[in-house]
Length: 61
Image (cartoon, rainbow, N blue to C red):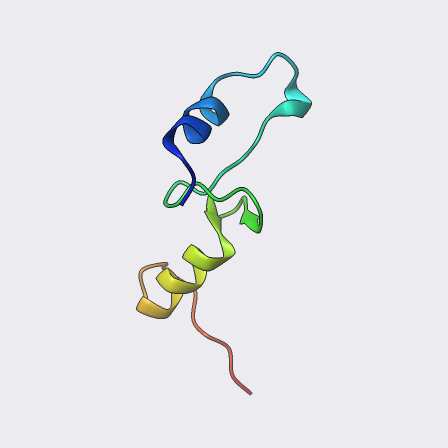
């Protein structure tokens, strides 16, 4: 879980667009972020396994 000060800093508009940091809206993690879902890989997997993301299911073959 990211500190609240770090999350607040990432939500401010940066001086330059390249400095924008995207973070998971659930936990604040910046690494392993998926833009399509606005989640990090860990939160994505938790929600997908619980069936809370429509259209996503665990693959098996």
